[in-house]
Length: 205
Image 1: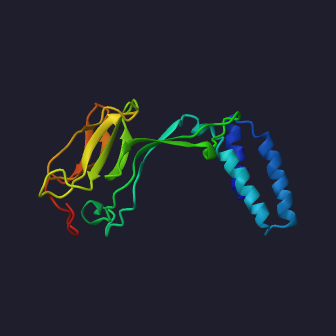
Image 2: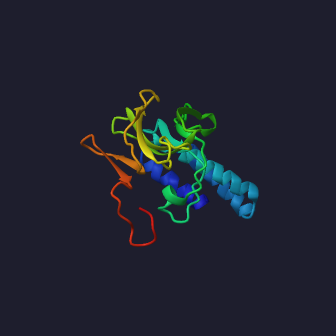
């Protein structure tokens, strides 16, 4: 951990970050290591120092918000077949995480705030992604109750504004549509079972 801490200090020093305090702390920790290299207190102190410096990394500066989906694990039999045989338990939604910084520009995860943009408690959401301007969010949603009597419940693509407003359904029909990817020309690519072909191994469409 101390070696990694030292390497991180050197790297961030080259990037222009003031690491004077961290170099002093590293010297203190190395002194502790010479006295008692197996100390758990030393290990925890070194990990904390490394973590605090990591959260000051200038490379993190552009990050203001993190978009994510909350859901239960799929627990499928294959890593590509959750749309057929995953444990599809409802709950969760689309959320955004905001992490504030302190006066030194360090992320303060303990002060983070979560805001829900879409309530997925009546089904399951997956893979939210923002467009290049971060103005529109695309995601797949599968309601617990089928939208059409006699059908299974399918994943379909939805879009909404970055604040959760203007929700709209983009795809429909007895097909699974998910894993949206924004394209530079404004289009949207996604996985779908509507092509009605199968993998050469096993059975998923």
